[in-house]
Each structure stands twice: as structure tokens, then as C-alpha cells.
Image (tube, rainbow, N blue to C red; front, side, top):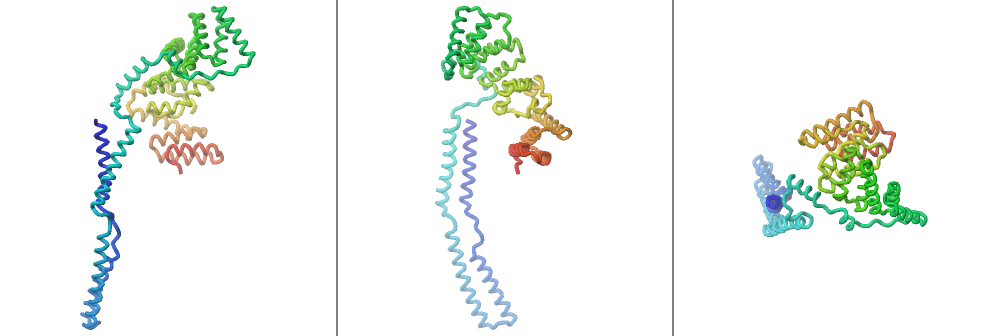
Length: 408
């Protein structure tokens, strides 16, 4: 109800302002006739002065007065006519106000009903967290997700490879306890795009390995289950990921999919923390690290946080897992102060040690986000001088300046 009251008041305020402008009428420049009237009155006063000084005679003065008076009457009649025809009538103004109010209020309501969330109740943080937990608890199982997912396009296999794959299937079926055979079957079923058969074979690998099953084994199983479900992470896949992280809490692929699961179940804030930590620990060229960095900006937007410069890309040590957890509990002012400290350290490093154009671009963009436009301009000017002979670097600098809102 509060939303509708505020929305209606805003619409009425806008319509009232427009209506007041229409009723007030247009402010025009002074009409020419008014200027002429002042001139003629000055001329009448001048005739009296000339008569008093004896410059002209009484008869000439009377004749001049008559002519000036005639001109005054003509100018006054013209000015009255201009006033009568200047601006719309009051009735037209009232109708115009009604039309404006209808367009503003009715148009706003129509737009909201078309693009808004009509009837959606308020969603405080506690309610959204409870909804996310409910979604996570009651989401579809693996089998249902596979039935709903778009089946992958079958890969065209060479005849010889297809024959060998079929022979491998027959051999493994005849030797159900052959661990190495199931490992090979998992790999080749995945290569052929048969992810459901691949994760079934991987399940058998884990069963045969018993206590020797590693975090890699469980992570591989979860990945194939996720691929079979079209990218969806089911409760069963979540349990497998938990088993992988239980054996290795820093396992990169498992942490990547764990963050993805959190994002799918309405907790992008938790997913962001997991991904930032995972990206920091990812070795160079790790596919999960590249995947995280490609999606981190979008996830940060959904989580409502500032995605600052990538510590690993800056060549600086990033925050620890404890630092990330502590930042989540900070007030907005404390978090802003922390971000400001990171930006200041990057600025000091560039000023003393220099750095690649990517670092300068990140600093300019970060200063724009913090609202420090003049400082961003100074950094941009310095970077343009430093990289004057590097067109590619200048393009990065210009792009960062545009993002910071200080483009020339």
C-alpha cells in the first residue's frame, strides 16, 4: 500500500507542476506597443518643455500634442489586442491539464502493469533468505532436471571410434568390478556427449574405489551430473560436491560449481565470496579460474557489491577467506573505507613502481566508482602521457575513462 501511495503522490506532483506551468501562461518579451507608449509619453513631456522655453509656439505645440495623442491611442489599442490573443484561454488550459494528468498518471500505471511486479509483496532480507533456503531445499531432483533439460546434440563419431566404444561398453558390462574399465568408460562416454552414461560409470568408479576415492573423483562425478542436467545443479549433485570439498576444501572445480549452485538458489552474495576466494587460489590457466573471472562482474552486480580490481591480476596478494568473511559483516561505511584503502595502495604502487596499462585502467575505473572524478582525471592524464606511444594502452585508458564518466 505504501508503494502505491508514494507512486501516486509523485505522479500528482509531476502533473501539478506541469499544470501550474500551463496556468501561469507564457512569459513573453515586452510588446512593441508598450515601448511605443513610453516613447510617445516622453514626446508629450518634451513638447511641454519646449513650449515653456519658448522654442515653439502654442499653435504648434497643440498640433504636435494632437498627433502624439492619436498615436498613443493607436498603440494602446494594439497592446490590448495583443493581450487578448496571447496564450490559450483558461478553458483550454484546464483541458490541457486534465490531459497531462491522464497521460502522466495513467501512463505510469500502464507501464508498471506491463513491466512491473504487480501484487509482489515487500521482500525484506529475512524473507528473501528464507525463500532462497526454501528454493534450495525443494528444487527438482537430478532425474527430473534431466527430463526437463534440452538433450545435447549427439556427436558425430567416426565409425571406428563408435565400434571401439561399443566394445568397451560390452567389456565393462561383462566385468562389472573392473575399476580401470569403468574409468575408461567414463572418459569415452563423456567424449561422446553421453553424460548420463558417463556419470553412471563414474559412480561405479567411486563405489569400486571405496575409501580411496579422491576429491577429483567426486568433482568429476558432479560435473558430469551437471552437464547431463543442462547446467543445473541438483540436490544429488550438491551432495557429491560436498563430498569432494570434504576431502579437499580448496578443490578448485568443486568450489566453482559450489558457487554456481549458490547463485542458482538465490544466494549470489555467498556465491560471490566463494568465487572470489577460488579465483585468487586458481593457478594460471586453470579453466575454472577463467570461467569465474568471465562471470564475476555479473555475479557482483547480482550480489550488490563492488567488484574491485582482481588481486591476482594486479600481482598483489588478495584478501584471505577470513578477510572476505569479515568484509561481508562490515557496515557500508566500513566496506567503503576498505575499498578506498585498496584503491590507495594500487595508486601508490603505480606512482612508485609503475605498472601495465591494465592496472592504470582499473585504477581510473575504481576512482570513478568511488566518485573521485578529479583524481581519476589526473590519473588518466598521467597514463596518457606514460603510454603516448602505445595505441592499445590508450584504448584501455579511454575505455576506463568512459566507464568512470570522465571521458573527454
